[in-house]
Length: 54
Image 1 (cartoon, rainbow, N blue to C red):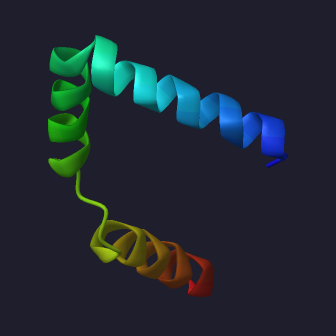
Image 2: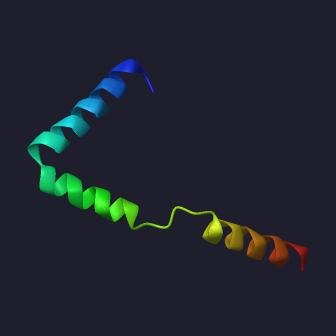
């Protein structure tokens, strides 16, 4: 990421925080409800590994 891209992204995030607080809060809620653990990817990898061994 170049400095101008980081600056652009930060400005958009700050604008969303101040100008669209309801949307920003709903976005945060949706992101926090996601499963970001390694559980599903690990199971997918194990299934792929076992199918490759057959």
